[in-house]
Image (cartoon, rainbow, N blue to C red; front, side):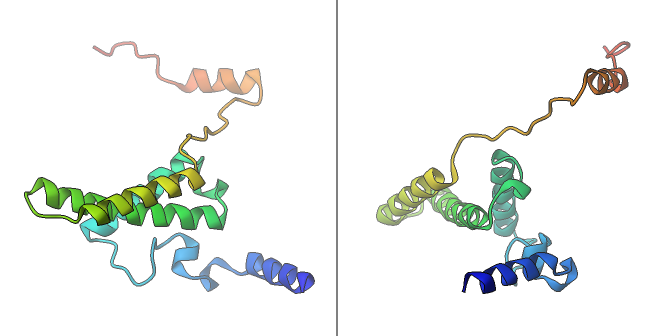
Length: 141
């Protein structure tokens, strides 16, 4: 059984990117969703911002990516409810409280601490080369 799981995992890694789903390739955030709507754009922005906080999408396991998507979906729903409230509409306090509780649980699983990327140059030479290519700021008012 374990050998079959390893073989499946290895074959999944070897698949060409064009043979994978658009969500797996990173081209779409969700399947069968027109990404141009305000809600879809907000969802996508939240997912990407959280990936940045986690040190990048490439540093997240698939299960963490799924948790991040669930968090973003819940956050979008909470924001819509809060917008309705701000516009004078009635909202369900119970549903809002449940969403807030869900968000709190998800964020504890994901982690709220930013994960910094290592930007330390590998050598003094690399650091000096980077500094030499940066603008000096002279002539700027």
